[in-house]
Image (cartoon, rainbow, N blue to C red; front, side):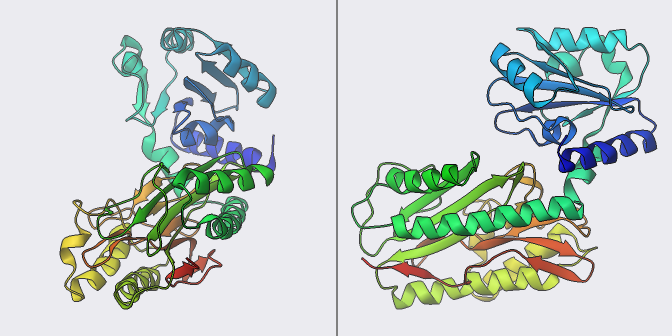
Length: 367
């Protein structure tokens, strides 16, 4: 076990005992595996995965790929690993063999239907909130992993800036960033970007569009270090920024700083979102805080690229010390197009620690 996995295992066992449970059943796949990763330290690369972890630490991992099972045996030598084309049936048989033990499942939204609606479900309870609390408020060791991931994100953004040139395709820019991260030993990175002017309404996986002078070029980089993700969002201009672009971006800087100003342990996610949105409202841009133009005003970062809580005005999750998140008022601006800005931070008892190392300003590279 790594130190991080050992610490998470101890916290999980303690939480299982305090909740009066006998164990947890967690699900993960190649896209979202934070619950599974927390419990087993195993991120699947393909297919589905389920794991049962008991209060005494005994662990079974179930996979539907023999290749993934081989990976899991090497990565998790203390766990019992099995693969089956019918992992739902295999898991149900394991649960049935456990008798009347009380097992919590997580996350509820991803638990396979065949398990959630099975006869054995009478012995299952929803443990999503239990593990969500562990995922949200991180230990100092976990916070340090996010801090190191944020430093990696910033280094990758500098590579991104060097890669942005007139005539290059978005995918070519992305390739330079991915090559850098792989050379750094970072095999996991979630990246989206956008390029153009007022016609651009958001970001997307890098495509074939070729960059032009005057473009706004936006990106989200989310690299992973020791299983923990951190994100950076920045906007740059390919060429000299216009007065309209600079004026518009001032609103985003003000919004980020307003979100930071309310951060501290005990504050809700909704309070952070409201602080950001009020800035846009004061500038007559309330329409662009709605779901038509923007998804969230930030979100958690950790064992997944987009952890709970989402920073929205109707999300009342309380942020505790050790919560790590990105505050980003990413949205469309009617005068210049889509703009993004944000860094990963950690909530503290009396404020926050900013992991960002790049300036909060509209950046530019020569055309």
